[in-house]
Length: 307
Image (cartoon, rainbow, N blue to C red; front, side, top):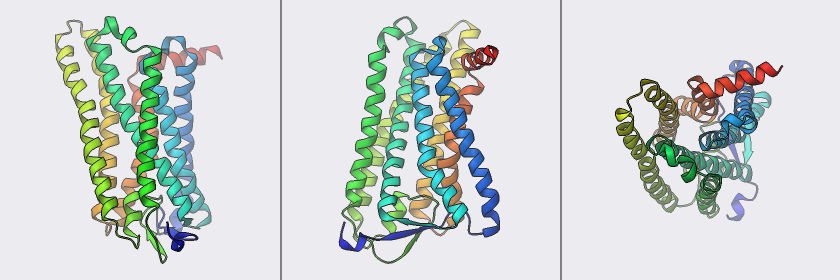
């Protein structure tokens, strides 16, 4: 990073350009953030304290709750600060820090969802050997692998960004620092950076998509053969929740990246997709898993009965 970037600052456009909307939006997003923390902390508490939930599936669900809280905490507090103070200036160093943690958590979550798909496949297709295959050491290694992979993925992008130079006062059409938009305001040739993004997104995207889709093809074949309607419904219920989370994560992420990357003229649409992807998804994930999960509901009732 050259001398031009030593005290370089960026301007975030924020959630809205209308001053009258900032106070109500501040309240709304504050409530969403608090709800995100409360719901995910509740799931983490239930998974950690209830002996009935000491299984690999809930271990991964607890990890997902931690990632969702972290993802929300990387973006929302800064957005709330900007809405409250109307100061939308951010230093390049702070911007790079936000990008690092955002990419790290996002990639870790993508890989974790793939691990959870494989976990459901083993649980449904090989139930008698499930606890032997998915023992505690294996689960810890899988989670550690996703986190390390997320760190490496994010670090690769940050190291490539550190080679760029930035000049002038530029505005990012978002409330958060986003990798594609940061490339657009660089004074350097960013062809290599765009090529790196394309390679990693295509290569990792195909691999992770295969890891998510293929287990469910096997699961579907197995569920069709199940005679018990109760067991079939339970399997479908568990899988449908996970598939819904995967669908929301990929669709919102895809539209967020696509609009930021190719159509920066539609700023309002881009900001809306960014809000849904970065703010609402971490809240929706635990709610979706909880709505159709009888074991989580029962565990929550047991906690309430103690009081």
